[in-house]
Length: 247
Picture: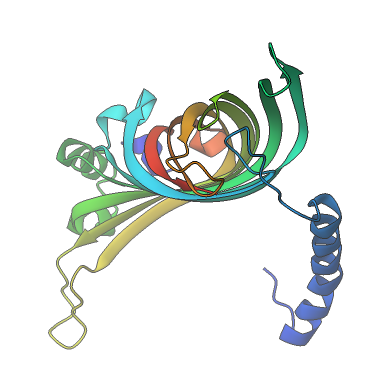
């Protein structure tokens, strides 16, 4: 459990002026990089632009596997195709398409902390009053990654894909316990201690897209990913299994 525990101010108007050039440059880059339209091909199961929303189950592994319970995840993402290729089949109507996408993905994972890990944290930090008062804890993981993705349709309605990338990762452990502040200030689950840190993260994975309808539109997907934190979060390894809808 010990591995889990590991400014200046600007005037608001001045801070907004300093941020404005960066926001304008970022907006211009996005507008320049995105395609002007997102057409869908009739003979393969994806659009040239994509957006997704889903969630599922998160399994823990690695160093933190014995400290955390399996939990749940939520994710949302989007992107666009930067290159595609087709190879004619036996006739002009039969094409084998594949495409390279650049996608951005945000994921949240919530997991419980085991009683054994909580007890170990108390023993390892006997002078931390907050930990001594804790009766439970939750782990929260946030990530935002940029993932080049290769999609290979295997039929007009089904495609497989693989991805890998790098991004930002935050781990947060929140310890809660019984309030001793009296009835007036007593919340439902008071936070008595917290720990967290930001770092880089790499991820990779793959999945399947299935288009239930003949015409282009929404698809359903199922995928598995592997996340491994770096630097202060190098003990955090997650395997989210998720499903959802994709356009």
